[in-house]
Length: 156
Image 1 (cartoon, rainbow, N blue to C red):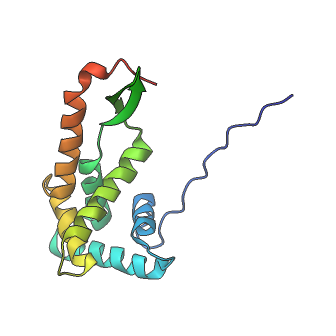
Image 2 (tube, rainbow, N blue to C red):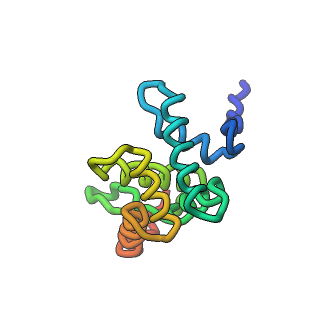
């Protein structure tokens, strides 16, 4: 009896304006209720405002900001003999990218009073300069992993 083959992930389509897979993924994360054109407009507004203010190309600037927020390790809960342990595990690149974008988006949403595009712009700039709430979240995650390094032998 033959076993099923492992499905190969199809590469995501890059966005039309910046030809970037990362920007395309971020547009999908910003999207609410299937309103992709609205999400696209928000993300493009963010990138255009970065382009106006800074010398560096907006796409590279955004990708560098995401890279600065990407965690290398995270903790996962593992139950061993009736006790729960926070086990530090390395993060795969795709997950790290997704988590970094989620943290940037969450930090922008927490900035009340201004439109989301303004909050995203400020958070992306902060992430590029390795400051802001998203980078703080990454540092907390790394600190947690460092504190629980003793349980690293409980790997999957």
